[in-house]
Structure formats: structure tokens, C-alpha cells
Length: 117
Image (cartoon, rainbow, N blue to C red; front, side, top):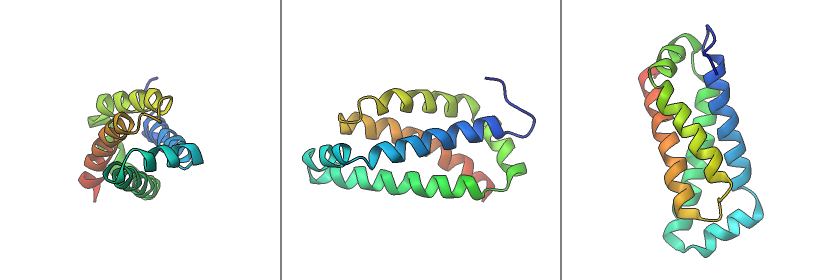
């Protein structure tokens, strides 16, 4: 999908995927799977869930002009992370693998947000 002039496509795609991931993570069966995966994994799961919520908030509040430049400079990593997360959500019950994929997108999003802070 081509980038529009103001960066909304990539921002919206990232937000869409983060919203969908958060909603999937909050489903009872996925919360139960995280708890059953062990204490450390459950802590990581809930930490990732909090980080996703924080990233959603920050992306929604970010100053768009600065954000556009950073989104474009990280476009390929964001698109790869979005695609990987879409696939990982289908197997969210494999909690450790899912967390690794989710955290990759969070790291890239964090770089974008840190650059405009």
C-alpha cells in the first residue's frame, strides 16, 4: 500500500494492528493461556499488553508532522512488524512466540516515538 502525503496510512495501519492485538490479548482464553504458560511468561504478557496500550496512546497523541518523517524512515520495519503480528495473532495461544513478535513491533514503534519526543 503506498504511503499518502501525510503519513496517515502507515500510522493507521500500525494503530489498527495494535488495537486488534490488544483486543485479542484481552480475550479470556488468551489471558488464561498466558497464565498457564508460567509466572514469568504471564508477567511478560501483561507487560506487553501495557506497552501496547501505551504505544496506542502515544501514537494517537503524537504530533503528526514529526511523526510522518519517522514513520517513513522506519516504514519497512513497521510494515514487516504489522504483517508478522497479524500472523502471530492467529496463534496467540503460543504465548512466547506471540510475545516475541509483538515486542518487535513495539520496539520499532518506540524508536519512532522516541525520535519525536
